Amino acid sequence: MRALVLFCVQLVVVLLLAGTAQAEVFHAPVGGRPFVLGEGHVVCGQAPTGWIVEGAGRALKPPTAKEALGKVVELTIAASPALCQSAPRKVRAVATGK
Image (cartoon, rainbow, N blue to C red):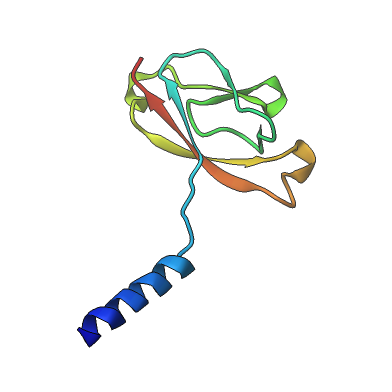
């Protein structure tokens, strides 16, 4: 009984201290139209091979090659172009089927 209580206490402590994981992933169909990334999202630098940055970095066009299907790429984004140097963050994009 004492071991069970100790286990429960440890479990509660771990759950309270554990952070939550959060990943931002954009999904777009191969050959699809450009999509707007949304408020506070600007692509910093160039897009990965096959992807095209449009609209001053605020939109992204998915690849047209079928080989890109299911491939996950990493993008660097920021809240504004001015923050690309000081506060960039990584997100992922994946080309999906239609």
